[in-house]
Length: 170
Image (cartoon, rainbow, N blue to C red; front, side, top):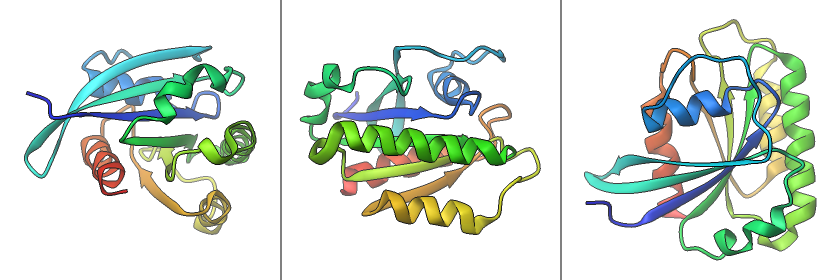
């Protein structure tokens, strides 16, 4: 039985693999080429220190009105994740733009625990690690970087567990 919920607001650049990441974890994965719009909420179970938790993903388009998520920001275990495609250098630039827009909209309500998620690790990396490190520094505070392949599932479960663990640690 799940202990408590973990809430993750997730956004990122177009075709970064957000839906694939979530759907792999929710057991709903089917390869597709469509980009999400608006908000999509899904859940998955995750184990941290042998305890089961329910993780709720709030996948949002960068244009989604974040004020409608006010109640989520007040919950106990909340994090924000920005995803980009490591095989597309422009994707990192869009991820930075989206993060800055979200940070501007949320201000002090921005969750303290933040993640930069690099998807498509099964493809050749198109940007230097220094560019990724610069974005993490710009996100500030407790920002963690996780890299995986949402398509193949490589390092996906490990990334989800680390994400949940970091949010619970605060």
